[in-house]
Amino acid sequence: MEEKQVKQVSWARRLIIGRNPSVTLIRAIILGLITAVCFKTAILPVRITGISMLPTYQDGAVNFVNRLAYRNRDPQRGDVVGVRFAGPSIMLMKRVVGLPGEHVGFHEGHVVVNGQMLEEPYLKWPSKWEREPVLLGPDEFLVVGDNRSMPIQDHTFGAAKRERILGRLIL
Image (cartoon, rainbow, N blue to C red; front, side):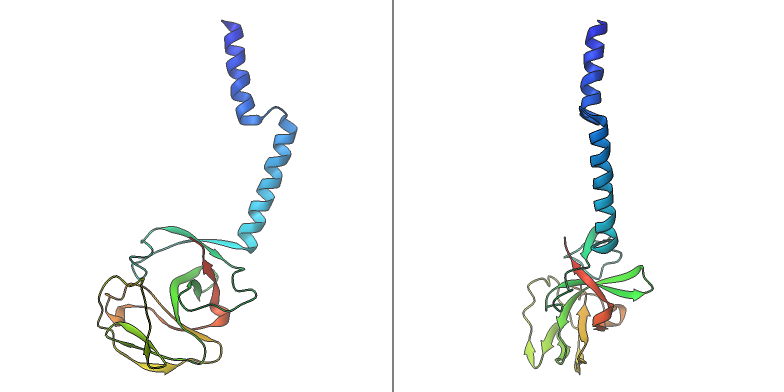
């Protein structure tokens, strides 16, 4: 009976700690350091709060922003990005619909870029948004949420300077 208990303890210990505890400890420390470096420099966890990105992203969902995505290139139309709103920790999740130097407006809920209606397959709900086109500056991107069923005055959107865009959403 005692021998059977020793084998069970040995099996459980091996599963948790491994055959060599010192090697397991070194692996755990290395993994912890790599994780800490990644989350400090490259990946930013964010919780979606609000309904402005419905139905693409649900309220309360946790996602990650890749801070290195725009290190060598600018955001592209259709990218979902994290935009620094106020301070280092308050961020908005929005979709890029307008690029620098473009005239961008809304007609019957659809984005109009330089007089052409933008194809937006991610929109699921009808909208009546109307807004005259505005000219974006050389370092401005027009960002807006996917939930255009909300009244336009209740929605936070507009031109975001390039330095305020932190990165692209991963998941």
